[in-house]
Image (tube, rainbow over all chains, first blue to last red; front, side, top):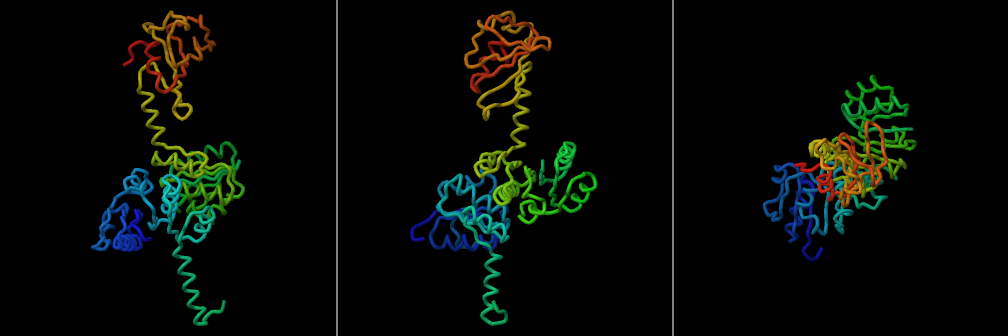
Length: 142
Length: 220
């Protein structure tokens, strides 16, 4: 991502706060959305983007987060279904070009991958990483 | 017909009762355990306790063979995902979702849900229509609200009384039916209106006020 991007991050948990702080530091224009205002306390002091308090499954809240101008949306709340819904709304209704949803449940992730939603499953990634370490240390054979 | 209902509280119960009475094969998916247990005693239906947007739960509920799935929880995102997984993974032909945010109605349709309805919008419309004017009862919005269907009861002092239909200038509205003393009359240009007649009027959304004025006089 060379030039300045308009990025919307939905969910200000540990991952959302980390991503938003990082991307903001890199000079991108970041809007972060969370239903709880206290969640924004987790953002780094250098975060220079905007915060929007609200439920991202409500259209008005997404519109307020300037989604119509966004190049990229990251849906990383701790609810799989919220992430999947927001990602699809961003892609279908607002034509955001890069949309990624975090999905904990690997079966749900597999289904949505089939319909072309970019997803990341922390469960799957952790399992793969852990198994990989175990294989390398020859504790378990593949 | 095989029906799966994902829901909660009284809505799931009474709807379930209605479906059971119609002899549908009903499966309810309820997230709270105590509620699921209580419903399983009250209804002759299969009741599952679980998350209705979970593929494994839907499979257990017999989604592969279901004809219709209704997602009626209070969370739009759960209703959407349940409908999408039911339709795309299990091939459920008809999915119906409750939409809490009325703005999501269009979104759900675009994302493949067969029917998305908003209780907020339905109630809002009902109240607006019922309180519009006395003697004029809006029935249902047709063609996504572009067309109005109303029932108007003529009063002795309504300007249209004793007039022939051809003399009424209704512009973008039409009297499709006259109900006189409980009998349905097909209106002709020469039909004369009487006090007490009930008129079924179809009009374009923007044009109904002018037409009602011609029939009922000052309605404000």
